Image 1 (cartoon, rainbow, N blue to C red):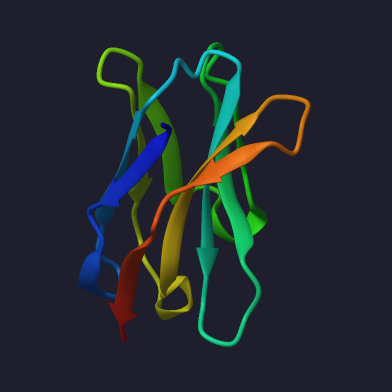
Image 2: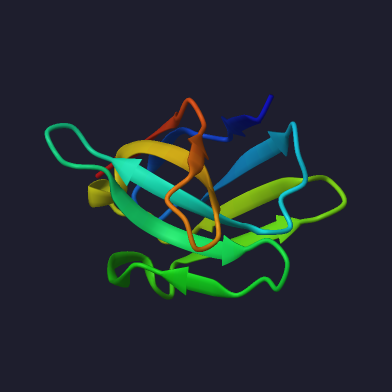
Length: 118
């Protein structure tokens, strides 16, 4: 059974940093695209960043470019999201996603809260 377990969220002041982790288990993810999404109160869930498990190719949403970095550790089966220069508008629940490349077949984690105070 596939499990995605996020950790690392919390409360931070504007300008600060956090690193989120997503521990993946239950299958091999070589053909998957791993992603971080976020959902702020009253807003739709939006994509933040993605990385291909095999090649490490990354993509970022415009609001986080230059501030966030997605990476993966194949040995630990873990995906990270390093978030720097955090802004109050980054406040949201952050979700880890694993999607089989070329399909809409995916899995979700339970989410971790990130709160940025001004």
